[in-house]
Length: 90
Image (tube, rainbow, N blue to C red; front, side, top):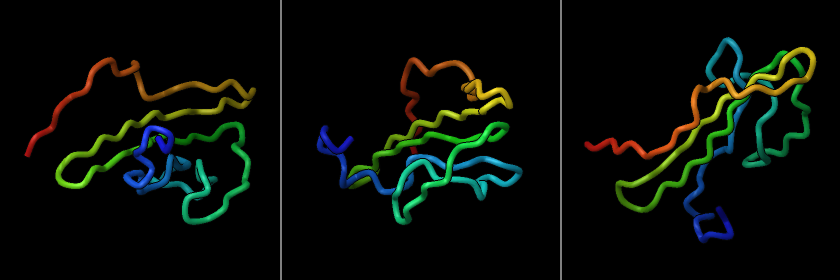
């Protein structure tokens, strides 16, 4: 994102842990705002959701949810990979 020139438009975390609350208390997926060195543990979930918000009324955000099984297997749980952009207009 930075290399493509959009770094200043990336204004929130890359992702977060997911528990019984929307934003869990587990590790963050980046060091945005605070440094987080906690490890991802088996039997936990997290999101990867980068977003770019350009000046004006345009932004784009992608979310992939992930679960780490007790045996360490990592599974994408957010369904089928999105193949197209869906416009949402005011």
